[in-house]
Length: 247
View 1 (spheres, helix red, strand yellow):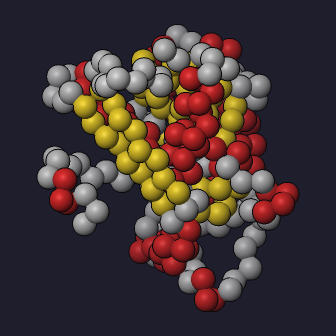
View 2 (cartoon, one colour):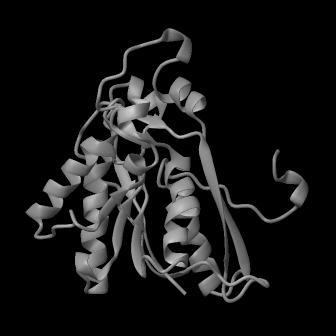
View 3 (cartoon, one colour):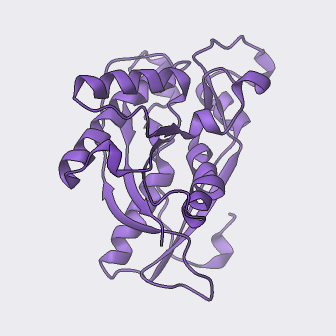
């Protein structure tokens, strides 16, 4: 309803909390292939809607384990174009991408989403290094979406087993977006809007100001539904990567 009056062709995509990366990846390919001149990628999430859909109603007042992340009420919108899209200088450019695979380690805990997504992040990061013949040190930051404090540790262990140490370059949007000590957000933030808000409000600013030159942006998603979860099925993960550079 919100954009129906614009009468602009719409592709609705959903990759759980990797949606921001997925939409930008698809838009980039459309523009590079000559199928569009400009595209707007919009992603958002809301704490209350995610809680009642995937966990428990807020009125229930259940206790949350320390592995839990808090869904971010927020969003981000990005205009992508093949060249200069207006009077303003572009904030950054997308120079590469890695499409993620579904990775399922059999975890079933919706209150511990970080470890559910970490294997997918490790898979996509490793594949990216192989495809682009790169190393962690080639990037100022390697940024995941919402693994949180618990998921970050799992990611480090998985990549070290594969010969990569990203601990110096790694940043997680879910860890950065909240202050866990003062806001009591346990493992950190999550949700489709987590990586979108962090990219639009913080990451692009760092590139724009010259603090960073090149980042690997890797939003992560847990592919569960309330039906699959209630049936006792596992929570697979997915992660899509974008190389974003300063201009």
